[in-house]
Length: 271
Image 1 (cartoon, helix red, strand yellow):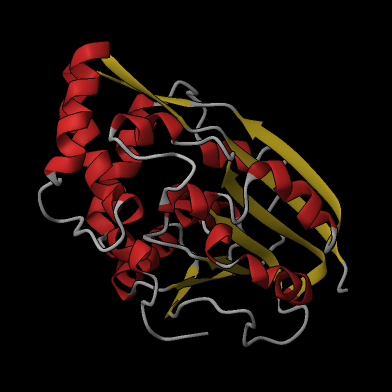
Image 2 (cartoon, rainbow, N blue to C red):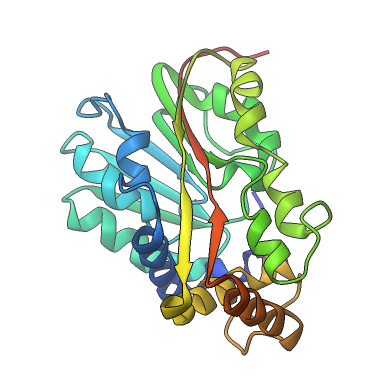
């Protein structure tokens, strides 16, 4: 693993408070009222899992729901390229009475743990940053363990991109999503896991005229993925802000595609 934040698209994720605020905006404006984390954990009993790994853990979005369901003596290790995510991640795990460990590293193609080190591995909205690690995930997972993956469909965010004047086919955000889209995920996971269960999560983000502040906060957070190199703490550039305002004024709303899918993978097999 590399110790530096090398991907400029990760800039916004280095701002835990902004990330948590955007997560709340997403929940507020989602057409699907089921929490995506509850959908991902559907039908699972995690009470015997003691060694868990959260790759691309961020501020602890998944850990917040996951940690209380693990064995009382469980240890949840979070790996993230953004060092600022360490304190909130540890807080979320500790609040559930579980042990937390955080390592600030960018995930590479190899991972520094022995075979079968974890009985639970989680990649929540992160595997498209490091899809080449799939063989490593199979190697690290205990034979009776579980890999959880959440990812986007290929068409996600197309309306947002059109609204801000960007071509969905050539945008950096689309390119990222298509590195590990839901439509291909089951097949790619099946190469390394003998049992793969897919749970679809159809969803739209609905922003109306009265929600313009939330919409702008959401777009500001996405800026480094819309225009690489953009500052997610500054003003939204006019090249983005003006077409966005015009779109909402003309249509009265902006409906953003955000169909996701969850994958529960068991019985790892190394190629």
